[in-house]
Image 1: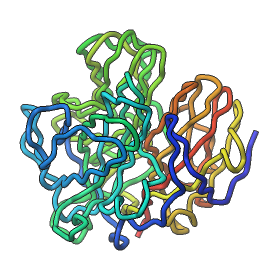
Image 2: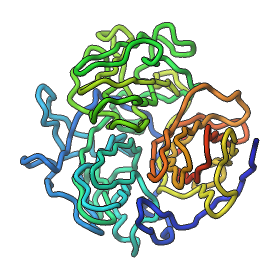
Image 3: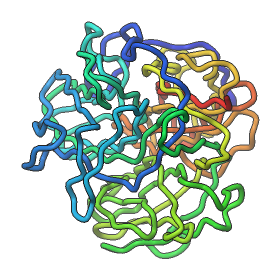
Image 4: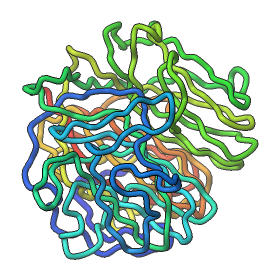
Length: 422
């Protein structure tokens, strides 16, 4: 069954039991950055508010209804053998995996460019939803720039709605304009392809890894510098986390935090190197868990698209429009022409949130006009609001399709940026 949606929906978002005000006028970035190429890095932890060390000039737990500025240009990796690392002050956007833990209340975090706190009300978009007793991770691609006083840096702002919460930030890469001296890469979106499913093999045990050789994956060139992947954890025996990283590297960061009885997914960008032999690996830190890995695109010198970040903008809220997506149903969503995404864009970065689910299920996002892939973008569970970063190709009409497997679910989508071939 197909439903048709072409209008932008801008209603307020209810997240983890907390109501968010109507969306303020977009304006968290003073001007549109130039289209930028990507610089991948091996995942590096730059901030952990639980740790007793000074980093990024800030170490405090986030308090209720608070805005916190983080200058990533001042952040340094702290987990040996990670070397000191900073995001350059000239970066236009950064790709960060954010993990929330030790939440004291149902809440949500919003991560955006400097100036979120000047909009006059809490931001009405969310990056991830948190609740007590659960560790939650989500990737975010966010504009960075000078702080709100104009001082040079690579600043971003984190907003916490309710209660207190600790956060962990892991940097996976950043965007720079090609005119700068740093070598950058272009993004090429691909039809989602499954490259690992341990349910067909043997689950990952504690402190073990599973390598994935990518030379045989159709459509991935040998000169690819990084891959965009979606990692899902399922059938976990205990709480723990999975990390996807270069096969030759150490594992000092996390990608997906899991717990028994829930399927959890998160997107990641993984650098490739000659030392890894063109392979990546999935590492498990505790218990037994199955891992599912889907490739959705890659970066290379001769790739297709440069990235332009935009202030997060709502492009879908089924609660005020088409209604929930039912079982085995697909909702086409027009992206180009909305939320600052121009006609002709070849891809987009979305933050997809599922809420009011009636059954465990999964959502799949893919370019409109192409066959439905046998992959997943977001795994959903009843009585929980779940978000995931979705970097996806757009169809020739500038739209994507969103498929729901079982039960019914309401879906919210915020756009964070887009890719163009120019």
